[in-house]
Amino acid sequence: MGFEAKRTQVAQSAFNFSQYFTSAMADVVVQGNPPRRVELLAPEGMSTGGGKQARQAVTLRSDVPGYPVITAGWADVPGRRALLRTHACLRAMHHQRFPDRPFEVDPSTYQQFFDIARDLLAACGLDVTIENQALASVAPRPAQAASTEMPVATATAIALTSFVLGCLVGGVVVYARFVGF
Image (tube, rainbow, N blue to C red):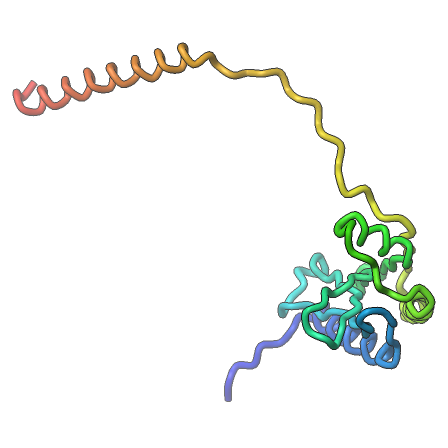
């Protein structure tokens, strides 16, 4: 009889929901280059820290290797909340990160996915928030604090004085040890 690790109740419910959501969305394909399928990522560990780490990404994943996964939102089953991003939001986020690359996700099939996902999450009792705009990726710079730097000459004098004082104390200790002071 061996020990079998089990997920906590919260982690198991999040795991079960990811399987349910992904299977319910199995026939939904978001067209583009390449086409992508919907997946709700399952929690990675055996515990979600009492629900603190229970947020699961709603992703669009290509069957073709080498293409990035698009995070279209998230679901927090214990918190009963979810967020979905509109096509315009994802496009703006993509252009912030990759200004020279086109965003190749078809708007009409994305909208079909969006509507189905929103309705499914709401039917499961989650409060769905819609993100319409990408957040600014660059935060404003904080005001620069007043300079507290010490002049190089002062720092050198302090370092040299500390070195000489250390040598003097060390010499006295060695002398006292050998002489028996």
